[in-house]
Picture 1 (tube, rainbow, N blue to C red):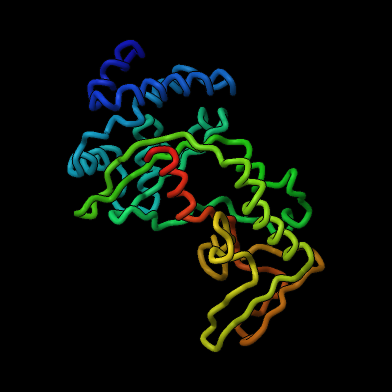
Picture 2 (picture 1 turned 90 degrees about the vertical axis):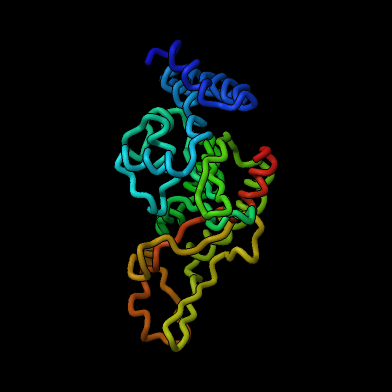
Length: 275
């Protein structure tokens, strides 16, 4: 549909109280597209359609999944639906990426909590060891994009319903506070060859990387397919293995890890955004 016809059609699907929000999102999308050289009309279409299933019940949402060939219970269902509603066939949006916008789907449980922490790309240990905070992969990822949160809320029957969307940036005080501290601690452990594994008699592995219980915003934990999905450590550094040493044979590589934002931190940020 031409944009002039799409706008009234999209707004007709909304509760009247949501229309100002969608129109405001369209204006913001235009501003971002102009700033980053993205396609303005595609940005407008995405903004107008981002809440288009708000009034659909679960049966209708499942019908959309069937129509677009989407599995109904994959781990990334929320993200997949978000892309399809934006008119994107794959799970990447070139226009959003060009505009520096990263799409993240969030599921809020019926009790109001978010079950999953928010993950980021796996850490390259060798690259991390050579970086500084001022120009590091993780820091730049949080500094540069503007995140587009697509939020789903679980109802009493356990069904996920679209709750809304919002743009979000990491507050500078958080980026330069706990997030920087977690990055620096991880960097120093890896770069200095101080990574320690404790393995019990059953083969359970723990490490000395930053944990969620010690940091209010971010932490580090596995992000590989399994324990055998490893990445090489910086040249000349080795794991220190304690306990059941026979359970870990290669001391020059470790299971892939990534930085995560804590789920309770994300929930608080959504509450600040009015969601």
